[in-house]
Image (cartoon, rainbow, N blue to C red; front, side):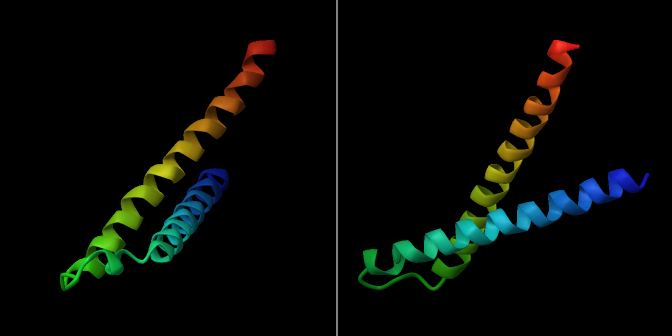
Length: 76
């Protein structure tokens, strides 16, 4: 039972870290310079984009790690 709780906590931390990394990367692009008058909702778009891309990257990482873990069953 504790292992599942630890795994869930680890997944939450990794997901938040991936969202933060994605947000930092998007901030480095300076999207606001692409507009003469940036829309008022541009910060919200950046947050939503970072959340969706970061979550997708985290899910890919979890899926990849699960596949690597399953490779051990190939040799048993």
